[in-house]
Image (cartoon, rainbow, N blue to C red; front, side, top):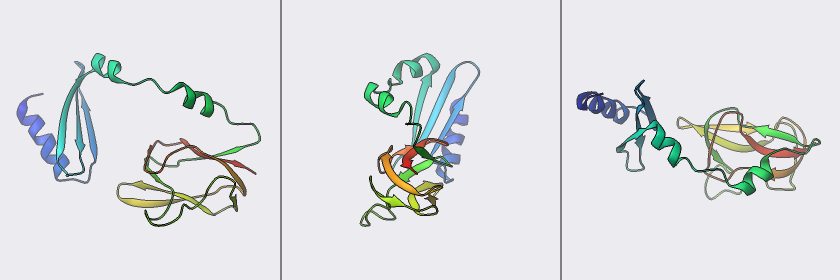
Length: 150
């Protein structure tokens, strides 16, 4: 990839709503373009071996705690990739807290994806036993968010 191609990629990211773009070539060359809070893109060339060396190992405590849910608990999972929010605004109280009783259809959280706020509703009635993510944390598709005792 030459300088002009990299420049074109930066221009595309700057003129779009994309927050992150990853381009990987067959020879192992990889570029990650991220939009920072100042809306400027950052250019980060990373080789595949270096990327593996930089990847942090998950904390042992988190892996142990979240490894297997109890059989009587239902996990509420993220239906999309985005940013998890516990409330509708920073000044508002969280939608739910641990030990709250909820009904099917109650809003549990909001996941922001591509500047759209998506309300995530409870699929079962019960009691919130565990909240597995932090406010403002990025979440993946099918990632467990809550554990609910029906």
